[in-house]
Every structure is written in C-alpha cells, then in structure tokens.
Amino acid sequence: MSDYSEYGISQDDADVVKGRAGSPYAIKDYYDVNPDLANDVKNRMAEFEALLKRTHDAGLKSIIDFVPNHVARSYGSDAKPNGVKDLGENDNKGHAFNPANNFYYLLNQKFIVPADYNPMGTEKGLNENQVYDEYPAKATGNNVFSPTPSKDDWFETAKLNYGVDIQGNQTKYFDPIPDTWNKMTDILLYWAAKGVDGFRCDMAEMVPVEFWNYAIGKVQQKYPAVIFVAEIYNPAEYRNYINQGKFNYIYDKVGMYDALRRLIEDKGKVNDITHCWKYETNGISNHLVRFLENHDEQRIASPLFGKAAKNAFGAMAVSATLGSGPLLIYFGQEVGEAGAGAEGFGGDDGRTSIFDYWGVPAHQAWMNNHKYDGALLNDEQRSTRNFYNRILRLCQKSSAIQSGYFYDLQEANAEKYTNNLVYSYIRYDANEAFLISVNFSTNAYQGNIFIPENVIKQISLPQETKELNDELTKDMVVYNPNEGVKLNIQPKQAAIVRLR
Image (cartoon, rainbow, N blue to C red; front, side):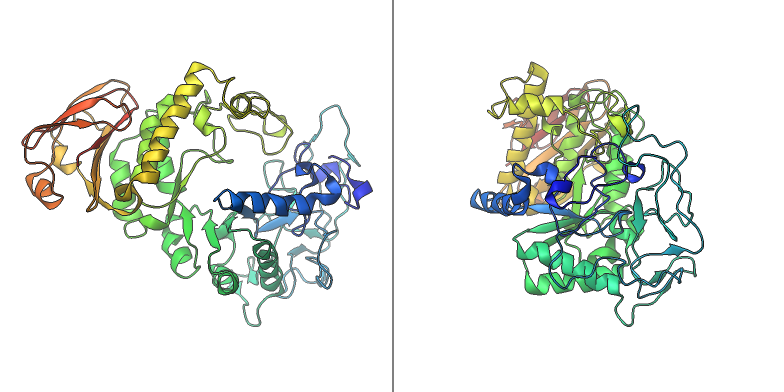
C-alpha cells in the first residue's frame, strides 16, 4: 500500500492486496526489486547487485524465491527489459483456455472482491471500494476457477497457464512450447545473469514437471552451478521432480516435518521417523531440505505450537543429522522468535507476518540496533542460540553427518525403550562415528542404547569400555561394547555422542 508512483511504480488497488505490505508471493513485477527493501528507491537494483557482491565476497551464496504458479492480479512490469512482453499482454481473452495464453479466463464474468475483505481496517487504501476492474475474471492462483474466490483463497493472485487445460481433464498442450514456459525461463535467466546462486521455487508441484525439465535445463546449461529447490507437498511426486524435473533439492515437509511436529506437540510416535526414511524417501535423502520453521509454518516457540524453543531441540537434532541434505533455518528460529501478536491480515496465528509491516522482537534483540552482538537477548534466547551454534558447527565440520552412512538402532533397542518416544541411530564414515539419540518424551530418559556386535565391528567402534563426549552437552558418557552407551537425556532433548 506504500506509494512509490513518483518512481514510476504503479500503485496497487487495496481490494487485491493482502495486508499493508502485500503478499511477497503476489509478484507484480518479476523484473524489479521491492522498493521497500531499498535505501535509495531509484537505485534499488544497483543495491541488490551490491548485496550479491557482498554476499559472494563473504564466501556465501544467495538464493531467491521464484514464484512460478501465480502472479498478482495487478501484474505489470515497469522494469522489464526492452523487447519483453508482459504476461497476458498478447492473450486472447475470448478463450477460457488457450495454450498460447499466459492466464486462464472466466468468460463473460467479472472478478468479485471477497465480500468480507477489509484490507486496512478503519484506514482506507487506494481505491478501497470492494471493486476491482478485471473482466473477464482470471482464475485464482490456488486453482479456483470462480469469479468469486473467498478471503481464504489466494484471491490477490492469478493462476498462470503452462499449457495444461485444468478444466479439460488436465490435458497437456506442450508442442509447441507454451509462451508461459519461455517467459518464465527468461525471468530465471535474468536473475541468474546477475549472480543469483539458486532459486527456491514456490509451490513447484502446481506447475507441470515438464516445464521444470525445460527451464532448469536451460538455466543450468548456461549457469551450471545454479541450484533449484522445490517447495512440494506430495511425497509420491518427490522422485519425479528430482529425476524428471531436475531439481537439486526438495522440501521434506509432508513426511519428516509433519512427523517431528507431532512429536514436539506430544501427538506422535518415533516409528513415523523410520517410516519417512525407509518407505517415503529412501534413496533420495541427499536431495531433501529439512526444516522446523519456514514462512508458512507456526513458530516453534509460539503457544500454538511448541510453546518454547527448547521443546524442539531434539527434533532439531534429527532434522540436522538424520540425512545429508541441506538444512533450512528460518530467521529468528535460532533465538526462539515466537511470532506473537495479531499481526495484521494474518492475525494472531503463531507465524511471523508476510503480509504486513511488523517487528520480529527476538531477532531484533539479537540485532541490537545494528550492533549484531545479541546484547539484548535474554538468558533463554542466548541458550537457544548457543544450542543452534553447537549443532550447526558440528554439522559443518562432520564428514559423517555431511556425507556418511546411516544405521537405525530402533529394532536393536525395541525391548529397552519404555515408550515409543526415544529414537536412536548412528551416522558414520571412515573418519568418525556418532550416536544420535533423541528423547521426545516429557520425562527424562535414563538407559543404555545398545549397539549390535556386528555394527560395532562394521564401523570399527572401540572394543573396550570408554568414556565418550556428548557433543551437545559436553557431558561424559560411558560406552561399553556389551551394554551400549549409558545416557540420561532430558525431555525433548538429544544426545550426540562421538563414538570414535
């Protein structure tokens, strides 16, 4: 809702903007940078390019979002390169579906703003009058083919057409290559040319896998090091989007995240973890992005989820060490940000708002007015950050966790566990071996984690009783080849014991 018209940026109609900042997933110009992020709006692209240079100079890489399934209803590029046609500019709006069109149209119907949508409360936004001039109406981003989407739909977005006749039995028209394919591939190439190192692709499974094969192939042919990460929620499609779609990495949300969330909330069982790696993702572990927070999910420390950051320390150990794929940490997670308060359009939903201008108090405490020294953190927040520091440094330095083998100890210890809330496994390679054991119970776990004799020999564990180090707590624990490792794990916590 900010007015940047003096910089040649068109203003938006409040009736199709969620909140006051607008959804970052309702893109109004794929060739521009959000002016809200700029120090000097006129030089916003130069500032972005300077950010990329600073990032690379620091030895880091930069991934940006690519939102391929939908755009803002008000899409229109003020910054597109010469010769580029806007999405929809050449559409034949007399066709509900046409493979050459960029959008789907609802013939002879006007778009109707959701009746109960009030974007700015008592403060009125530009043209806020429950009317948005769109005729014929476009299909809404979440596949709603109605001129009257609800407030809970992605009503501020329009679905892009990749040559699939969604209302015509999902029939595909991919020859010739649909215009949308080329327009979106050109956008990826535009940002790759600026030095962006990767793309996190929003709702990737809502776009045909054939497009990804085409687009990723084109980008990586010219920029081989650029990576692609798919947000995907259907485990049955994981392998398809890796193998045919050419994605480097995919979200492990419906599977590991959901299983760990249930355990954090005392609603799950550790057998679900075994089921995830053994049956759903076996053989593709290196391609899985694991996480416990992202912009869509509730904050761990929220009363609506984990209630305190420490209640996910055990789950974090699993996310970080079970597989060899990437790990995502959402900003503020490492200091226990709770996402508290009614944050505009999203309300008090346990998430950090993506729709409104808002503060992130725990993250701001770490920033300490741009000193970035954490001086304003409280003791609990410092403890949380110290935990994340320890486990991330371990992952960074450990060859066994980065690329080693995995051995599940659940079957060997089935009779020893008094409940279904302790999970143990080994990560090992030629250089080192770790026992990771997590207690998801609300009570402390005291007992031995047994390691079978054949495993002791296979991974060259000590043949005598020894004191070993817990990498998380720095406590010493006793290992006996006949009895295993004697542990005392506090509720919701983990032990990571260096076996050799």
